[in-house]
Amino acid sequence: MLGHEERKGVRGHQRVPSGSREFKELTKRDAQIQLQHELDKLLATVPDARKATVEKELNGFAQLFHRFLQEEGPSVDWERIEKLPENAVRDYSTLQQPSTDQIHMMLDKLVVVKLNGGLGTSMGCHGPKSVIPVRSDLTFLDLTVQQIEHLNKTYKTSVPLVLMNSFNTDEDTQKIIRKYKGLQVEIYTFNQSCFPRINRESLLPVAKSCNVDADMEAWYPPGHGDFYESFRNSGLLRKFIEAGREYCFVSNIDNLGATVDLNILNLLLNPADGNSTEFVMEVTDKTRADVKGGTLIHYENKLRLLEIAQVPKEHVDDFKSIKTFKFFNTNNLWAKLDAIERVLNQNSLNMEIIVNSKSLANGLNVIQLETAVGAAMKTFEGGLGISVPRSRFLPVKKTSDLLLVMSNLYSLKNGSLVMSPQRMFPTTPLVKLGDNHFSKVKEFLSRFANIPDLIELDHLTVSGDVTFGRGVSLKGTVIIIANHGDRIDIPSGAMLENKIVSGNMRILDH
Image (cartoon, rainbow, N blue to C red):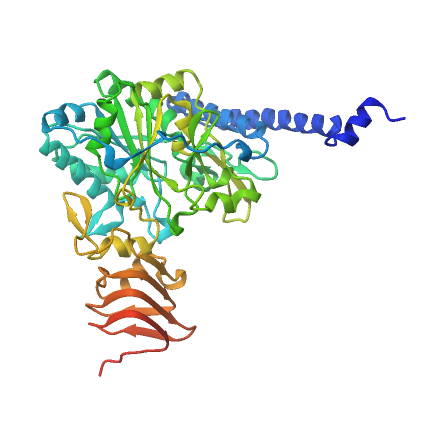
């Protein structure tokens, strides 16, 4: 006759034999002890002057690593995702405009933070991404500073600009911001943490000393979710609270649509219902180009961010569905400063861990543990999504994005890009440029005598060895494909409307 335990095993799920569970627990405990031992060795290589700072960072890393070991499987139970409640996402068009008298007082309570930790390597550039020229020889950083200066001059205020750099971008950024000295903008910088990359097999740090410059590959900045801790550790969070600032507006430096929005600030500082909103995530409608972007869900009675990395494999297609999840996160976020401080003091900032696998130049497989800044939403009270126009999401991740922002689709006004009124519809064209010939900024620029007229373009695909002459105009759907070994030169003054061009076309000077 079957014993009670065995019967249960037959009827329900097979129980995990205790041996394997014990084995897992022991290996986890061992990994934690080994890691701590290695971190202590790393700390011993730090000069005394920097010891306290580095120790704080390595402790932060040890906590992240501990949570990584504890977590099993996806952090979201798919069946428990609820429909967004009626009032969870406000439509931007319903927001009140503040009066001019209010604006000055409101801006005195704001801090603007730009996430400036990324390098331009994916677009073939050296140094911080924020110094790539995007329009009229002005860089992301130039445009941001122009926007804030214009705001400060217009409303006779002094909104500070804060840059969160990484060890990759800090030195170059410091040199560049000296040129803004004479402008009406106070610029502050702080560095996000610097964490050791982990060998995927041994789960131990690759780094042998804390001299980051000597072995850059062994270290990484842990994603923008590190903003909260690093902002506090820098002393700036407390400084701004003491100065009477109430909210920060956080966005990626490469999102050219992320300008200070007075209507959103008004909603936060002068709520009609008197209820304080501690965290706002700007979302916008998904299109087929945005299916991988994080989305807003209702889960365990809280609004929270759901990233594709947290989705169980069998539900990835559901996640990408525009019908089920119609919004995605623009990473334009507004957070109450004293609420950030409270959440940090309570140690309740439990953001989902993103495990990013990389291979080093020597072929070693490593992992880096990261978090996303928007994932903190669930730890704040009174979280809110605001469905904003697409114009507030204009990121430049690839040269295809650069083509759009350099074109006549936009004009530049006080550091902000404004879509041309001649464009009949507010959506941007879908542009795909072949990686082999267009992915690096320098090569991309060499293929255009000047940027074509894109006012009436819907879709552009270019693949292979293609160049564009001066004054080219592209309309409707244009597909240009040069086969391997062939070359296509689009002649100056050409107008292509709903055309497919393939094969070989060379224009020779004589």
